[in-house]
Length: 95
Length: 111
Length: 245
Image (tube, rainbow over all chains, first blue to last red; front, side, top):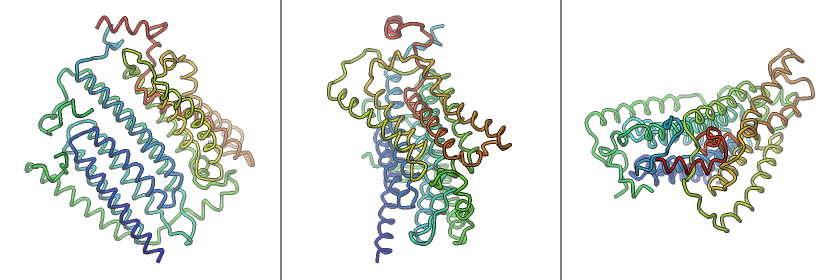
């Protein structure tokens, strides 16, 4: 019985992961894609726990979801700033 | 056995989706996201292969250590790639190539 | 409609062919996974036999820092290389005008940052017998740094560079030093002497966690600290250079 419940949990988790991955790769809005990527990382952490890999789950929750997302967001902000013409003055370019 | 199969095939599907997106999209952020999804798929296959149900023995820790290494390296690679993408955009005069043909939303609605 | 999956949008002929090829590849790989025999050769027993000699109780930590320590050494080097690459590409990105930090945000940082550092230290210590270790602890430590960077604390802009650099290379240097030390003592690179494995691993983990945390925070800051090239107090010289542009 518990085996059956676990299999159902697996299928639901897997389907939601694929669904989120589909949307994050297909959506036109990159900001939305990044937010979906963060939630994708959290679901992955759940999958690692299910795979009996708590070490990997901890690393994924902290790195995959917690740090990669902000990295993408800051890069997005930086790119948008550049596109609006607020070109940053670099020390390399001044010389 | 069935659990291993489910998660392995999911990893494979994620890998395929990421690979296809990596090829057809031209925005660098989208490409980096796709590479991340691909690497997640590979990690999933690797860990799923080592999975043994609870009560049927200990888990092989070697793939876990390898995946742990892989996650940390993929984060640092992502960071470097993002900085490179930003620098490419800052130093090139025109906006990113292929932006319009992919139908990217204009910059106001991105952020 | 933002719901444009890959297939909802019009693909031209070339992209259709690519899709077909990717599907073929995925199906081929799926067949390989399907036909892989169930009882795979595993290293569980080999690890379990050597577990007592490794000095730690957690098998993953034992593999990571003892049996395959060379991997981890090179991984720490990869992290260092990523920071070097980032620093050589561009300067850290700070907004031009310093805005007032809201008291709520400040309170959250004051409350959370020390707790995060504590959790990081706990995770490193816990790594010897349970799930946890240098990477998880370092990631939490780095997240504390990211939190402070997001809040744009004014002190971060003028952070002294030499201690930062020292912190960045602390882990790799410690790791390499212990590896060479072991080479002299036991004749093997990273072959820890009998009985000292636990302490050496904890020492390496602590150093690496500090380095990994600083590395991740530096990667998030996205470039070298800018007071390094401008000599003195950076906000002043920054506004001057900002005016020139």
